[in-house]
Image (cartoon, rainbow, N blue to C red):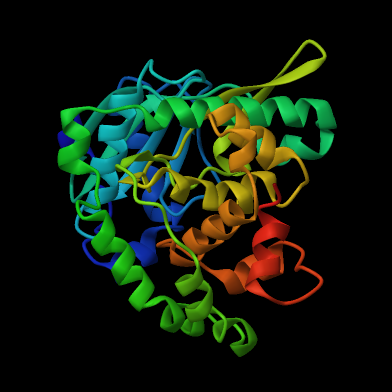
Length: 318
């Protein structure tokens, strides 16, 4: 019974930080929760990555925990989005089986996607298959951006997209300075943002962190195909092009042709794909709520000249 489950306190950021990786405290409570859900005979294994505690429960289930007081919106967002996208994407997303509040936490028991992480498989995937996977991601994002429901409007923010962008822009230089970005780059940010026109558009449902680590693939004969997209907790509603900031950084990673194929599959026309689009995507990357240009520069190769204009066409190569 759920009344017998006692998860450790996580009512503040400090408490959550203390228990987030402490399996001596989380493990027994999670095992008790799994038993209460009727899955006591299944192997429980924690996934190594992720900001929240997430566990594989056998081969068919995943259990994800959310601290209610510290991060209540992430539970509401993921639960609402998973229910909204069920059966509406060309590839699987986790299906919600049970979701409840428990002892200062919330949890979602969901189906487990099949296959392996695209991040792990990528080095073994031939160039032609990479291009086909890019096309499939483009089709998936087009479908995701078309999903709407009354619940999304009520739960998934921000509710003032233009205000969100203004706030991000006002804090942009200070944010990247505090993050350790060198002055050579910091000095370019205001002028670069002033020179980029972010096209107004109606907000759509965004994943916001489409990366190889959040995509699953399987080998189907001699070809690779997508088998799932997950981790919808950072989802939000906003301009469609905001989505492609993370796509360029974490899916195509500057590899020539990949982003172009994805965008054409999404619905862009050939004449839309040029330097101005690359510059808009960098602008959204700078304004992204989880932006870290200093970290990106350690992860991806820098352009021959250290300018934001060159960076745009280097990382978001079209």
